Image (cartoon, rainbow, N blue to C red; front, top):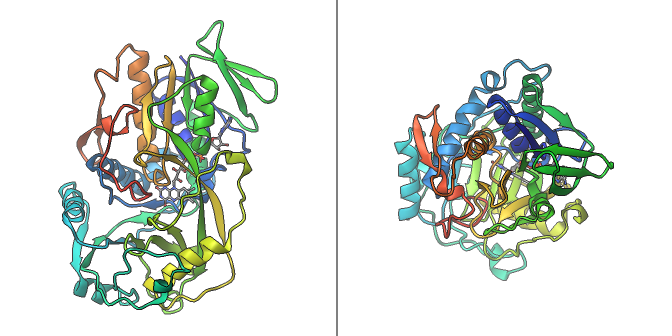
Length: 428
Ligand SMILES: Cc1cc2nc3c(=O)[nH]c(=O)nc-3n(C[C@H](O)[C@H](O)[C@H](O)COP(=O)(O)OP(=O)(O)OC[C@H]3O[C@@H](n4cnc5c(N)ncnc54)[C@H](O)[C@@H]3O)c2cc1C
């Protein structure tokens, strides 16, 4: 059966590889010139397992195993393979409340090396971090921003072997090579402009070049263009996805010269996340979307300003300097790109749709790089099951995660999931 995947990002390439492994004839179409040149190229590639939904903790843990065994997952690759350094990740919640302790407990139950550290333990282990509580985060022009805090954090969660993938676009290119070797066809510099009913197969995809392509199955993995592609197919989902503009900024890492290892930090208290970059010379810092910051949703993903701005640079870098006082403000460096956000709860939508043959793996909300290979498997299983006559709405698939030995109910990723208890931020 012919399947067409729209989008050659890290997730689109993973979906294509898994569909091929299940016997589909697969074509991937992308308007860019190579795999991973969409939002994947700006990803921070952080692989952590601290999530509010237990199913996502498990999927992220399965993903962690795949990144750790990447060579065996993708097979022989010509050229470079991704690197996956694992300096660990510190989560700094405003309080060690019940939900944080429940998340840490679920992580431990799944065998993840997660530890709740008291304030004193965290201070001894991470002396370069200021462990005051700055919650709630304020805008930098608020007079309270520079006031010293009298409050101390209760403690942190330490995920001992969390890591990040260096150069996330390379992960997509490694997957592209594995998929090509397995028989997937990639067509680059081709933009899908219309999705219509086909005469001989279910769909006819019209391309900007004037060419057309017929296929039985279409999978929308178009990242921040997901809503546009759904509109082309005439598909309206119960959950909305929207592109959200983001910036990630770089500063020099003061620990580098001292030979001290910097962990990844998810600072929910301060409103940022950061990790080492350039083999530890730099720190890159993004936002965890504190309530005081206005989210910059955009209507046209092709019309965004890709230059970094003073607003984000100050906001993220000054918050970094509060948490890590040895950082100093350097020259402006960073990237601006888009998340594809599921507005309701910031969890991906991986599902069939009401249009037979049309599937989605979208709304990845700035945190699905880590699960890309796992989402690829889940999407391919859903496509295979539906195309074999199963109604996955009425009888959802149990999703097995062989590396961690557990089965997940993936209803929490369906388009009909209803309200989920999540942070409704990039933390998930
Ligand atoms: C700044 C930033 C930081 C992030 N940090 C992390 C992180 O630390 N950890 C983590 O787990 N996740 C992170 N993410 C999220 C993660 O990177 C994304 O969820 C993931 O890369 C999305 O992959 P994708 O394949 O779905 O989309 P993309 O990589 O955006 O690929 C979609 C592709 O579809 C193509 N396309 C779109 N429309 C069409 C069309 N009509 N015709 C043809 N082609 C089309 C585009 O050209 C593009 O190449 C981050 C994301 C961003 C933007």
